[in-house]
Amino acid sequence: MLDHTVSLVTFVPLVGAIVIAFLPRERPDLARATALVAALVAWLFSLGLLVGFLPTHPGFQAVEVADWIPAFGIQYKVGVDGLSVVLVVLTTTLTWISILASFGPIRERVKEYMVSFLILEVGMIGVFVALDLFLFYIFWEVVLVPMYLIIGIWGGANRIYATIKFVLYTLVGSLLMLVAILATAFAFQDAHGGQWAGAFDFEQLRTFAGTTGFANGLQLAAFLAFFLAFAIKVPMFPFHTWLPDAHVEAPTAGSVILAGILLKLGAYGFIRFAIPLFPDAAKTYAPAIIVLSLIALIYGAIVALVQPDLKKLVAYSSVSHMGFVTLGIFIFQQQGLYGAILQMVNHGLITGALFLLVGVVYERTHDRTIARMGGLSARTPVYAATFGFFMLASLGLPGLSGFVGEFLVLVGTFAYNPVVAGIATLTMIFAAGYLLWMYQRLFFGDLSEFLRGLGAHLTDIRPVETLTLVPLATLVVVFGLFPGLILHLVDGTVTSVLSGLQRATAINLFFWQ
Image 1: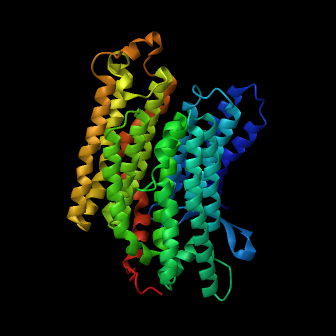
Image 2: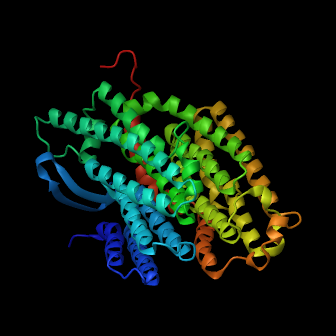
């Protein structure tokens, strides 16, 4: 009997979106409930996928294959390895939490909002499970439309500018990646006597890349195209400028998904596609990418230090934290890659929670200006303690999940180059600066005049808000104490990527063919 769990996880949200589309507009409560149920069902299926996953089994599991466009060798092919299954569970977890967090703040066009959110979930899961490059590209593009709507319709005052910037950046990278996918498929087809079978199949392309290999010129050009698409999504410096605007204008749940999942699509793309398919080019470009990662680490932290807007501060901290991810990937060390994957998960949990907490204070004050806050701990002690917990996790406190990923990346970086490791370590000082400064300004001292004027509206965390934060806090503690739960799952992915790189050699840029 074929296992269809991957397809169920992927398309249950789509079924929910279709059901919501036929619900009466005057019953937003039904739309909310249906969206939450659909997201929870997808989450349960993803947990089943996780429980049934065998870490010692090589290759992809729960693979489903069906011909789609056989004339060009395009298939509906999905499956998971350790990296995929971890990110799928992260996606389904943050999605139901984000939908629940939207119950209060989203009061207009609730049907459309919930449909957009569920379709967004379909696209994100699809990216993580697609094993056909054309299918991967379709899911990659599916993500763009609902995110555009979520920011553009339910966002802040400058939402149109933010959405146009987001779409333009993403489209440029996506179109270049499409050209690279087609060029790769044509090269594979040409090498196999004009046969299209397997031309878009990731596993066959990876095998070809590890044996015959693509021509140096194609590798350099295709990797660069993939790099631009993924670097924009991460986002890496200098392709990051769309992110702060998108975060500031997005509704709270949109920011949670943007930071928690969408940024991981780029890092996942590097590990899954760009490096295995073009290993020689990856080694060639790696030093430059490491430099860009270090710039992102330092730049993001320094700019976060001077942000007056609470949400923008957290957004720039993401630029810095994702710099650790790309650094860990491209030093091509075992510890670094383990750390990068851990950091992807931990950043999703911690920064997602921080955006939820920013949303809590914004719902009460309709303001995010740090200078107007102060003394919140006296009126909202539970909120202050919760914010402090996730702030310390973001800072990398040992025992919480934020520590382990950064530590492993630094260990791997030291093995790669002690000077690079030293520069990366310095950024943690800046992180302590902006996080502690933010916390002090928000919660200590006398209650600000602005907050006093809110009177009874300034309340502590509500039960629904607690329900969204408790699962994230639990996972932050569990993965901080037991990081092996994730490391064991992704061992096969790390081994596969690094073994492919062992046979690779950097290309001489002046004499490539």
